[in-house]
Structures are given as structure tokens and as C-alpha cells.
Image 1 (cartoon, one colour):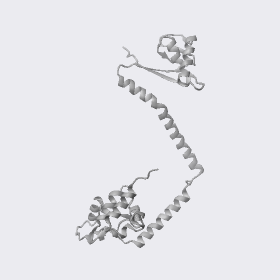
Image 2 (spheres, rainbow, N blue to C red):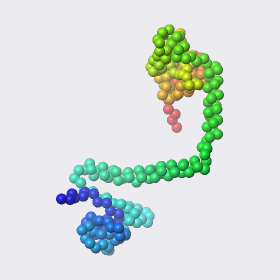
Image 3 (cartoon, rainbow, N blue to C red):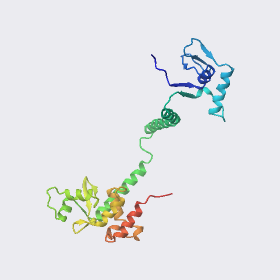
Image 4 (cartoon, one colour):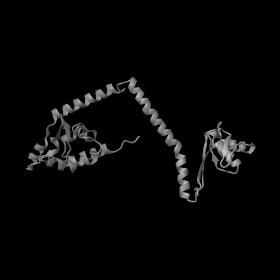
Length: 260
């Protein structure tokens, strides 16, 4: 026995004809045209009568009352189901379908346009600006390395008096617990020396990392510590690490989101 359908989908013309015919489900044919569809179970195509045409106009006005609209441009779904959750889910899905499809179309269009632009413009439009930023950043790193001593994992371990064969264990443990940070240069990991006191991590560094470690990279942290800070009256945090409260407050202010 064939299971009875619970969902019927019509365009506006088909729905008007279905109402005219007593809401009989409609079976589409290859020869269908607006105002001429075939009722399921009947062999002859049906036409909209006067009542059907009035229904057709009413549907169009209901969906788009302020502008000229065609009922054939509309899709109407009729769902028969006892479960209210099913009815609500279908309704929610149908309301969101247009925006989902349009968003996907815009995405595909943008991707195609970008692909064409790349053919006519091999270099991105911000190439010059990007290169300037890269050059500026490289110079800033070079100045940092010249002005601020940095240590290897081995040197940090030796200064701490740790005799482990794995000389990166000390820095890995301290870095993992948020006590120190590192920078990378020439394929190696380096640890700015200002963050150590008597071979141990300076506690102020951990205080700063609590606020900024998720917002800044290693190099950005290095620049923050070695740049004049307005919250410290122009002092560089790396030069006044013993002022724990002031530097902790400056880091907290830096971490605050920008509003407006």
C-alpha cells in the first residue's frame, strides 16, 4: 500500500487551481504552463476558472501587496502532520531557505570574481603596503635584537642551575605554565633576558601574560615590554618590572576591548 504524502509543494498558480478543485494534490507534467496544470488521478489538464483566477490574484497580493507580483514566482508548501514540532521545524526551515540560498550565491559569485581579478591583476592591490609593513617589522625586530639580549634554552637552563640532559625542558615548563614567552629568529627559539631575575622568571612577566598572551604573539609581547607605555608615564615595562602593580594595570588596560 502506498504511503500517503504529508507534504505538497505548489507554485502559486498550482495552488490556486488546487483550491479551485478542492485542494486535490497536483501532479506536474512536462507540458505544464502557468494556469494549465494536471490534477492527480485525472487525465485532462485543468484550467483556472473565475474563482481560481481570483484566488491567484489574492495569493499574489498577499505575498507582495505593494508591487506587481506573479503567483507563478511563488512556492507554497502544504504540510499535514500531527506532530507540532515537525510543523514548526518545517516552517522555520522554509523561512530561512531564501537567505541561505542568496548567501551561498553571493559567496560563489565573490569567489568567481576574485578568480577573474587574479587573472587580470597577478599581484594583490595591497602588495606595496604589505611589503612596507614587512620591511618595517623586520627593521623593528633587528633593532630589538641589537638592543635587548636574548638567551637560548640551554643558557636559560644553565642560569637556573638545572642539570637536565634535555636542556629545553626548563623553558618548555616555564613557557607552558605562562611564566615566560619566547620569540623566533633565524629558525630558533630565543628568550628575552629581561624576563629573568637571578635565573628565575620575573613574577611580573607572568602577571602580564595572564592578560595579553592570548592577544599577542611572541614578537608583539617583546615589543610591548620594550616600548614606552602611556599607562606607565612613558616608561618601558621591561625597565621597571619591579613595579608589579603598575605594569599589571597597564597590561589589564591593554587587554580591555576597544568600544566605539
